[in-house]
Length: 432
Ligand SMILES: Nc1ncnc2c1ncn2[C@@H]1O[C@H](COP(=O)(O)OP(=O)(O)OP(=O)(O)O)[C@@H](O)[C@H]1O
Ligand SMILES: [Mg+2]
Image (cartoon, rainbow, N blue to C red; front, side, top):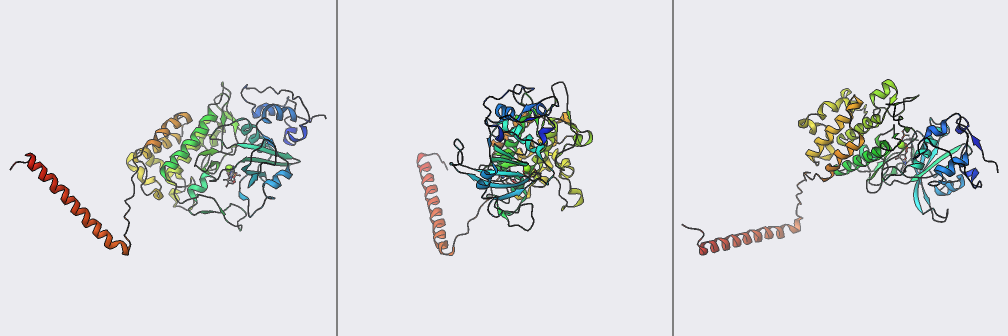
């Protein structure tokens, strides 16, 4: 069977993997970096590589190629009432379950199935970026891509399922029921553990996890710029371990002799994008550091980066909070009131100063992500968290017992005091 060829142009309409499995010996595509195939490697206009070469050499080893029929079984025919999780710019996401009979070598597991909306703003390019980056990069703080589907014009991504959804839901939705964004009149779905207030140490753990994910990307031999860090793109496992998701906008960092990459379009999410990137189109790893600063500030304050329901001066979280961040005496004023003061005062000061540095208008003054990790790590050990005094009102029936217990305690105390005094007197310690 002749394998399909594509150039950077045809790459936008063809697909790799499923149609070429019978070709036994893939030709090696030589990536510009020995570590990893980059998006640029397959966008090179002069390059002609077969779909089979690409799939077999770099991506196929880690990923499973699913058919549309299999995905229908996995998602219970894309059931809206039972499986729909939510919808973003790429398309709808469904919870699914792979049972151990589906494929030899593929373990039974819950998955999230993200289906490209063919009428939506994203397309093959974003799908391919996810496959190229997440197909090759593995880290405890990056969501795991299990496979993909590319049949006709359909594009689907299959990830490990993250039971606690995303940070946006956990931090900002005050009830246990989190409504999916669209369509508006659909039922609410339950996001387990979507609570009113995340405890302080859980917030620190999430910030640290996201920071480790970004540090890993930035420190690769060929660095990756994530470009769309926001609370909605930080997914949480059952233990609140944070994992970065959505690599559709990710870009390879600049070559070592360049300071930045210039992007054709300014992509990202309002309220999170670094100001210099918006102004100049110059993208660096420091743009991610700025977005991280926004997320850190959201974790501290419990406020969204943009919130038009607040008074005018507080619409932009950064503008409102920045003057408080660098003054340790004013940190309490920006802390999430739902924490009810139960946070480490010392830890909050360090985190606030860190957020301030990440949000610097000058990219060079921002810390690197590995410096951020080093600063946040000790916060997990800071236990100066005030606890609420809990007074348990005794039940009416217990009241009598309670009074007796108090009397007995008093009597016991008196007996001990008396015995001690007696002993000290007889030992001659106390003199008249
Ligand atoms: N692996 C996953 N496990 C569990 N839920 C997921 C997973 N991936 C995405 N989701 C959920 O699916 C919904 C849609 O996610 P998606 O990433 O497509 O959009 P978004 O992040 O909300 O918006 P945007 O497109 O701007 O990034 C969100 O509620 C998200 O938490
Ligand atoms: Mg997302």
